[in-house]
Amino acid sequence: MNTKQRYFIELSFVGTHYHGWQIQKNAHSVQAELNAALSTLLQEEIATLGAGRTDTGVHAKQFFAHFDSIKHGTKEELTRWAFQLNCMLPKDIAILRIFPVDTDAHARFDAVSRTYKYVITQKKDPFMEEFACYLYGPLDMKKMNEAAATLKNYTDFSCFSKSRTQVKTNECTITHAEWKLDKNKQLIFTITANRFLRNMVRAIVGTLVDIGQGKLEIEDLHRIIEGKKRSAAGESMPACGLYLMEIKYPHSIVN
Image (cartoon, rainbow, N blue to C red; front, side, top):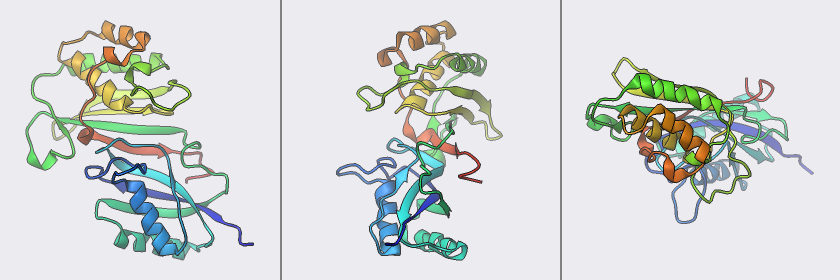
């Protein structure tokens, strides 16, 4: 009996035309595209398992999935597989590399941290329409950063989670949360945590923007988090400005 080899596949995608990573009924997903291309290439039924979900329209600069195959590809063959997949897949999905891992390596459960960024532009730019959120008016970035820093003092983020999600806990450990102004005068929010809840980053950004606009005070953020009610937090920001930037694994898996 031929033992299957487990592989990690690193990819990036523009999420504009997809209902997120995960396969859903009557929806266009990145996972479905990848499964179909891999199954055709390897001539066997391939089912990938991703590092997590992404919402409709969210982009990923770095994403990982794993899959098992009866084929044991050499380093040269894996490079060729990546090239062939890139020829087969739509132009908004790119395979970066494929590499073998231990049979118990898991793209979702072995991830130790994830980093997202959210991009806000305050100048209307048709070329950024699908890649940033256009927000007119002044924002107090100092207050937004003070509020962002307080997120690290909490672990229960029920107030920023979509309701009726199938997760066992709303506990997350945030290690970094910061706003910066880049050279193009875009406001970039970067946040890192061990895990994220569905819709969490966009809800956090919406709440921080309310603080930056003077609709909420920093003290209100404490009340919102401690109250654990989604209705008390700010509105979710549009998906177009959100990017999954990096997923980190133990060095033994990804190096």
